Every structure is written in structure tokens, then in C-alpha cells.
Length: 118
Image 1 (cartoon, one colour):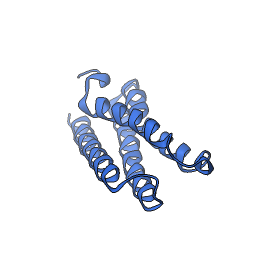
Image 2 (image 1 turned 120 degrees about the horizontal axis):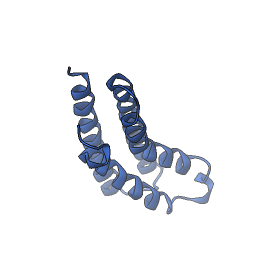
Image 3 (image 1 turned 45 degrees about the vertical axis):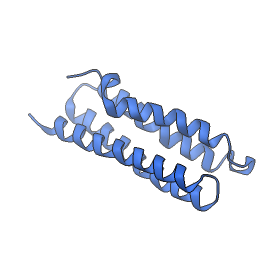
Image 4 (image 1 turned 90 degrees about the vertical axis):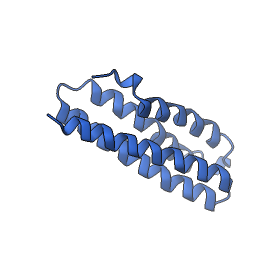
């Protein structure tokens, strides 16, 4: 099995995490303890859970962490929608970022399926 850091889903989620950190720097100060924190947690939760799961002792535990990571990608999709509707990000940024998180979710579904095999 590949190292988790070599998986496309990990690489993309890590890159998106950095993007979210930069994007939320532009949010209003009143979101400092609200949406900014939530979006950053969702963003880093994905690669972090992939790493943690890969260090577990069996595939079943690893798969559970992949599921948690996938849930965080869904959470991020709502946070992006809310950010757009509040006027914090543009329609273009929302569309691009949502599409990238949908890609991550698909990759995580494939990873979870592969962990179920055997």
C-alpha cells in the first residue's frame, strides 16, 4: 500500500488546506472565532485524519478515519456556500473550491472502498 502522503487525495487536501488558510485571512475580524476557525479545522481535518488513520494498526480503523475525513469535506462544502452567501468569497472562488472538495470526497470514497477489499 502507498504511503498516505503519496496519495492524490492527501496531496489535494493538503493543498486545499493551505488555500483555505489564505482565503480566510480576508474574512472580517468578527469571524475570527467563528467561520474562520471552523473552516480551518475542516480543512486540516481531512489530511490530518488521513495521516492518523494510516498509522492505525488495521484497515478497519484506517477506513473509519477516511470516513471522518470525507465528512469534513462535506462540512467544508457548506462552509464555502455560507461564505459565498455572506459575501466573504466570490462566486468563482466558491465554485472552484467546492469542485475541488467534491474531487477530494470522491477520492476518499475510492480509498475507503479499497480498504474494504480483502
